[in-house]
Length: 147
Image (cartoon, rainbow, N blue to C red; front, side, top):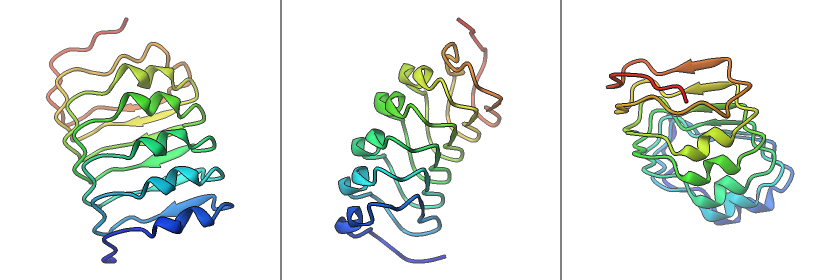
């Protein structure tokens, strides 16, 4: 485990960065400049102290994998639907109660891992035509509606 409590604001200078793994640190926030990493395809934020993801993150045009599991997230913003290239979303082991409808705009999403959260209903998956893996275990889901 590292002990990074913040990322440098000038991280955007790494304009060709394709993968960033800052897992197992003490990050409680991310700099907005992270949204300027236009070549970023993989972002791993596991095991940190994040309560939210910055809105700038959802403008990353090449992001295919986002792993923000084992944090303190309570929700995902509606803007998540702007990540048109996203194929893998892992947000297990947080405190997420629901996912926004914007998630259904992720037509390329193949894996959605929402295990160990506080969800009481399953997400609407109507637009997730490429979805191959959906993990909802260890939540509080009482029924599933497919519409």
